[in-house]
Image (tube, rainbow, N blue to C red; front, side, top):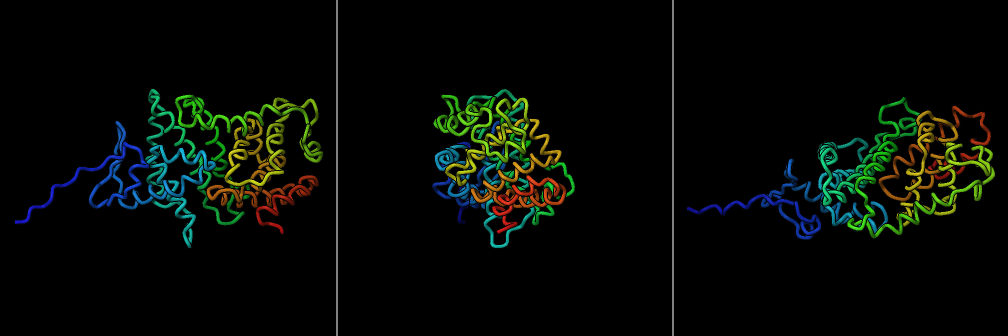
Length: 337
């Protein structure tokens, strides 16, 4: 009688993901389980392949190249798999607009684990993983749009609970940033402190009056030398966007453009939710600048830029200044040549 070889125990990836992915593991021989102290999931062959693609491909599209390398040293597990599944769908010859069962499955479990970690006392080894997961969940939310035409996209479509969800996620990321301190001396993100200071702090601190603001924006948004973020809800967004209008957005400087979201005042975000025409115009300009930078912003940025321009044309046709300023975002998002 030929004896069957002894079964190998499941392999845990509670070890660096990069080490696992450098040597492919046949899933049929080595079942792989991801787990923490409370939950465990077994990965099939497709999931393992997807994590490999995250390591080799998708990770390099989050942030710039310097920051992206850090993602390859952190076990993101289910969130990584979700984003890579979306990336697969984006790159397919006939991309499906709707989330796949794989995406829904992995995202729901990633969110559950994430929330569970946040509800318990935060341990120092979890800080970088939680912040990176927050970044990935933000990218997943922005990349997840099922509209195929501007008419199906916000703000043209009928109101839905998910409207501007990506913007609300950014508020949550601020809270995660504060409790995880990614720029602390013990964080793997500490090396990005100088870049953060350049891209965000210097920009925020340099705001004053109306210096550098185009006259047409000063008139439209009621800006004057005495204006501040406390007295004018458009002030911070206009100041953050203006210096970037002369720069072409690409992956090397995308974080500078992304930082604008964090500089939007609560009142400005409320104006966006209310579809205020002047707030929508600024958002259209931001979409127009970032829409060709990285894959996970492209679809939403183009469709919602188109939808915003059409909304302003249809519902604010009498606002001459806004109609004249629409030419730039319309050209960038493909509505005009």
